[in-house]
Image (spheres, rainbow, N blue to C red):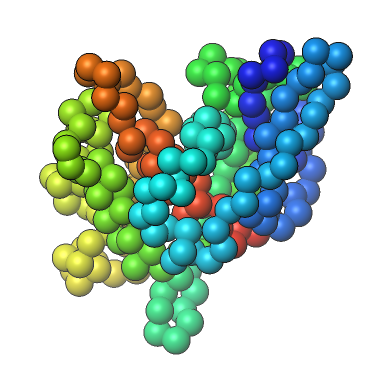
Length: 232
């Protein structure tokens, strides 16, 4: 493991999964291996508090965030299920159960490596509640980031644009009006799993211009899933 290797410190990286503590914004830190073999923990990058604040399209804040950490987290997500709901003041909250895959070895490995061998999760690692409007906001913010002018034409942005503009089953007004709670659970679960899968990808860009969306979108998805999350 070299000094440039970064990985997210969490209990799910252990060979035997222990009970998670309540996930807080400060639970993610960067760890690098020094030449002496010691692990050096660097100061944690603070995350925004509250869902509405964390999902706002703050371009500068997301540019400063270490993209590899967010992509590494998305790569650890095995799947997301929505099986339960609750109603609070006439607002339906959907309970997302997030399953994180487990590395098959305790040897240090980069969480961002596409060749990492992982085991599918048998039980959810943590859960988080989101209402329909939260999904709508995530969709709109991702759309803004991939359609930011001048338009980026990399495959990463184009995949999100095609999905958001042409796929019918998404968190938007027409779906909210024409579907019941059970149908919405299916639509929202498919939507967030699709977004996580697309957010994991990397795509080359044409010319010298860098793709800002490949920095923004993983951080948005990570904030959506981790903000106010609780262990199962």
